[in-house]
Image 1: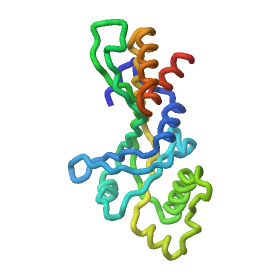
Image 2: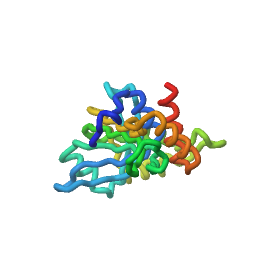
Image 3: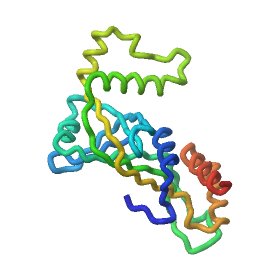
Image 4: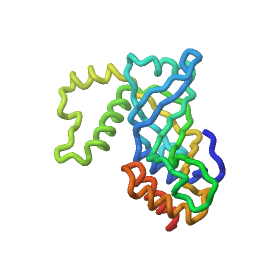
Length: 206
């Protein structure tokens, strides 16, 4: 990922926070000599390894996991909120349109899980994403036979993070007045725009 100095994010805690807030990632690697990508829900375990460990699963029918057996090098792309930025909001000119966004790329090597680890992953995923439900769903609602058969249809993968790249493009290269104008304009926008405005405001107030 191309990351100019203005936008480089080196804070591992901030990158982990983004990954946990936006856990539906893009798993990318090379399969049969060509780029291959799969969209996956991910569990980040921040304390497993120096930079954390990522757990996910793919359909057994998906050739991606077979490719990772041959060449385990991979990257997971986590993308947070993003928003268009109009040059009409700036005081300083000339200027051109741009896009503010936050993203993290996690690099590592994938390895397949055994059935016990896969079961823990599936239970962890449901626990995380069912937490807000009045009556959270758990695998205990399934028969053991049905759950075991379901697990045979997927392959669990684990990636210990070897390298993290963070790009938080939040108008850091613009004068303070322009940044204030962008925050004000984005605060009136859609959900993504408002989220970017909040991140920009937090940086301004830090």
